[in-house]
Length: 280
Image (cartoon, rainbow, N blue to C red):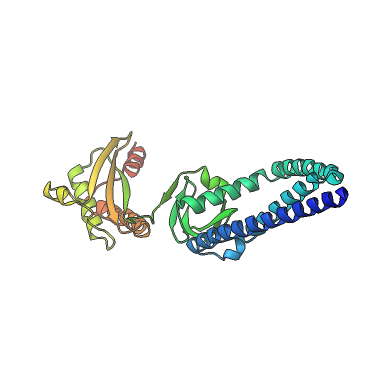
């Protein structure tokens, strides 16, 4: 009779453990499912891509329940201990072998949670990669650069780099147009030409504040940065509505300013230096 009672007690224990595991599994699947759907909506990706996490939750809970049940029954306790020990060794091996992959997955979760950028944003990662974000998954992020190439960057790399997001809040961009003119250049004349050419460009915008306008500051500031061995370094600050327009402004101004300088008899520093060398 005692043996029957003991087996009945063990049977009830097993049923109780399985019911508890089932309830916890449903709750966790619901929570994880909501998180996945929310993240997929923000990232504009298919949520089924991340469904393996819900299956992983079920597997882990079922494995824990199996170990608990085996260890609670004296005749199966040895098997339970073996399973637990084997799982620890297996976890250590898999963890060591997939350290980089796991790091990418964790970084992917952080990208989803903290959202430094989203699909469609224009970003610069470190000093190497610039482009539009096309896809973010748990292993890597794909961006399309200005040469229409797809650059696939592991999330762990992104987490260790500085990210410049040009899409957040305000896309307006200040471009630096840098020139080096000869030492004998009339700086006022050169600066006036630079400002005129910048203000004529179709993408130029006046980004001055009301206070700066009242103070009479020019909408295109040109600074004398430093003296070089063969010339003077000038930098113009030109504003555009977005980075793409800013890039066009910079390229166009390099050409138009050079043409205006040639017409006005103003030499660039390196050309002046070569002319002097040829004369000697």
